[in-house]
Image (cartoon, rainbow, N blue to C red):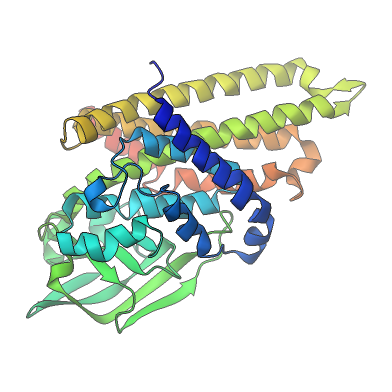
Amino acid sequence: MATPYTESHQMFRKTVRDFCERELRPHMDQWEEDELFPRWVFEKAGELGIFGAHYPEEHGGSGGDYWYSIAKGEELPRCGAAGVPMALMVQSDMATPVLSDLGTPEQIEEFLKPALRGEKIAALGVSEPGCGSDVAGMRTWARRDGDDYVINGSKTFITNGTRADFITLMLKTQPEAGHAGISIVTFPTDVKGFHVSKKLKKIGNWSSDTAELFFEDCRIPRRYLLGEEGEGFRYLMQNFQSERLIASASATAGSKLILEEGIAYGRDRSAFGKPIIKREVWQHKIVDLATKLEACEALTYRAADAYNTERYVNKEQVSFETTKLISMAKAFVGDVTSEVADSMLQFHGGWGYIEEYHIARAWRDQRLFRLGGGTTETLRYYIAKLMGL
């Protein structure tokens, strides 16, 4: 398909690229070691309009289409690690879209606008210790008490969880009703009874914080309900589409960078009398990887075009056909990006196993992609259902 990007999109892309290369990358080694990056990153991203480019102006955004988000996702990997982009994309594309879709004017003023400005940090609370991709199996629940909800339960694998100012929280308001009992609320983390149980230590994505959270008789007003009670599962399935799509675009772009770095390494590194890039076995492998990444981008762009048309042009819900394309993109990109990272580590030989080289970090970081936002196995099961199999 023809490139969808206008001059305005490219100017925005340059803003994100400069932010990553000038203000983030120089600090990345330290932030990876610290296993956290400073709050000013959220504030600066908000100040530059990075979070809100694809949100309506009345919600605090710039009124752009979804291609601004894709451009952002493609540039964020230039910061040199996946942890920071993941945390920033949770803020802009995972915890907040449902607020824009369903939020009352009061909720938008209290939560969404400050998040897009980078003044409040957002998290998305879905996974639990006993259920990940099986969302309907969640046990966190809320009971009504007058004009309040009282919430009990726990969440895990929550990006931004140790320092979120609010959580877009999935829970059951009718525990016995399965999918039909799930609702979504905005949950301020200064509520009594809320605790960060622990910060989780991960294989990769070190610079982002990931937490296990605990809710004990947490009381919030019922006005923090997003949309209607019992419709949370349907809302989440719509919300997942932007999460999976931006992740696919970002992972594809990040893998292209890995491949470029590998080619540069192969030109400089010699073995048995000539640069290793001149070895036919590696030339063929790199050609195959580059071809697969082109296919990743094409499929992701096709899904993004359909998503943009439905959500931004026609103002509709995401269709089953577009959902299928997005799910296919994420499953395919997950397989290819894993192959790219593993192949490029092998291409580096022993140096690929040394933290001094970026490929070691990239190899660790990319592994999350086939787990987060629905495992690859769950996606294939879902795609099979959409195909009527």
